[in-house]
Picture (cartoon, rainbow, N blue to C red):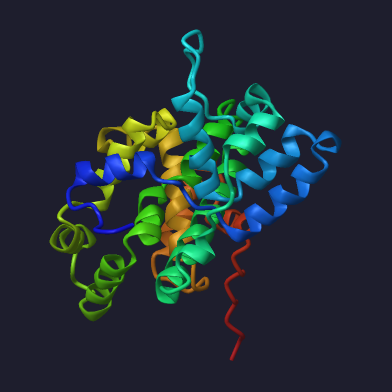
Length: 278
């Protein structure tokens, strides 16, 4: 890549033209479908795409860049996007040659961090989708995609700027009191949320992604859905023992109108053990 970009605007320009890598599993699965494309449908392709946040944002960025003048509505439904562009265009224009595992082959620590972030995004999307369906949200696809893409700026920085990202992680581990935004500002020169917001606007990503970054929208049920899904996935990433989880269960229960014990059941958290009588 040569010298990496320096400023926020430089990074937005670079990422807007960079080939976004995809997960090796995504490339493998789509390659298998491509060999017999006429035997598959858009849903099968969509299911593979939406398990990979990088592939999802790659597709949406392409679609927004090739949107017809007559197409005014926002494209957030991956299956619809694939049907609109057609299988041939999808397989020919959305390259899967650059894979994350090869790109970061010399930065294994960064690859580990990236894959953890991807897994967290996948779980966030699963939670958000389930809750949107329970709430009868007709825009459940936007909710799911927004949860999946919540960390997309961070993922892209792990891919294209691994050393500074590892430096940020080292600082945070050394001093738990440090604010993430302060460390990012010191190391990168800008805050990750600023990059996320800029990419969301530049690439015309789902409107809900912009709304998520507006504190005034915190009471919006769809915003609450995504934020709570992201929080739960983060707090349970290393098990069900984080001290923040009881508050997560309570807040999710308020969203879904159910007691916290039922929330624990639907998200797969282990039941609290009842103390044995003396």
